[in-house]
Length: 468
Image (tube, rainbow, N blue to C red; front, side, top):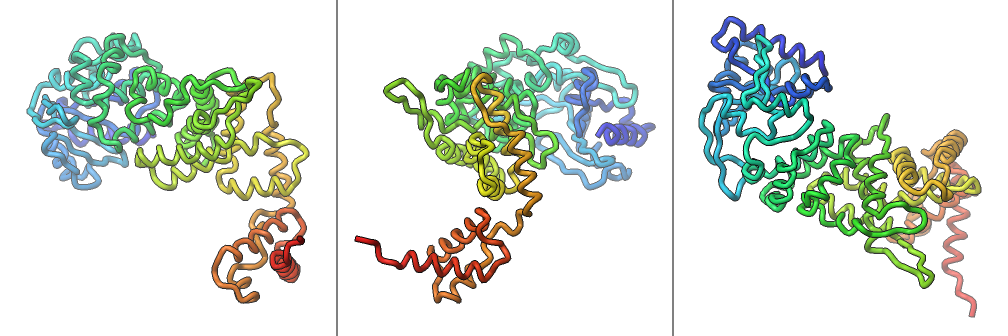
């Protein structure tokens, strides 16, 4: 991505050289911050100028630098274009005012670069780099110091900053986790004080910011801060019962602490599944425990069917956050199945391994990664399933018989035509019975005649009168 950004900046510099814009356009925000920190650079860039950003965007388009006609937001003085494949957002230096009921400014007016810096979220995001000279400007005079101290501070009174745009509180948590920064004491207290203000932010915006947090390797740190600042209380109520829910002898932590340790232990490398989805499954894998907690007369703690209940809670919560059906299904499936690999022993029959492969489908490896993280977050001195051994066993079973034929040799249509049945549960029962015979190794998936014999036997046994 660095090569693309470098090419984008080179084209912008050359395209604006010798024009009235030369020396008057500045890089701002994440690009400048991350460059000075020596961190990987973002995939997009923000430009600011004391002037009309919409006119600049149109100028870039007319000179052939922008790949499409600008997308403009005249009310906010912003425009977006793509240059050399990278997204470029152009902003007019501005001052803003807000209504109490909205995080969107209701009045925008042109301003200086220094005034523009005051409206931004954190001081470390106010640094400017002149596009042509490379000069670094610190309009507020505090950003460089805060960047070196690795502290998040707001340009103005934090209560005002967060009251105007409460989404900045979630961004504070994400930046702190992502950059390894601390949140200034006054800023932290302002987040606690203004947490309920998050209610005016659309659930889609909250979802986007929460997803960005869960995509970080340090997501567990951000989750801890969300709880302590009470931001989690505003959109994650189903997760709160995990806090303080004590467990059994297998665990060191309450359900919440264990879940954060599981998130921390997740290894998403090399998977097609997005890292944030797997971490979300780790966060939610035991969300059903508080609702299913029981204590025997001898003091033993159990969580019967917490996997099934947890999958329901997870799906409902993710649906309330407007995640896609595909995402919800993947995460809920992992939550529902996370106990099964943990019961593995070398005594498992091949048929049990086949059922696990079949039921997990494309989520098999993510499921194994989740279970390994779950185990790492428990007491290590108690016995646990050997997931690496299970993974090897899976490979052996898959090599001996490909997964594709692990199904009934007969289709539902064939069964209905042969036995004169209409659509209904009985047809599904016959197919499921035949599939079980295949998984158990009693029926070859290509043995149609054998399947007919077993199907007839199945129907005869169901029709036989029970003995008195």
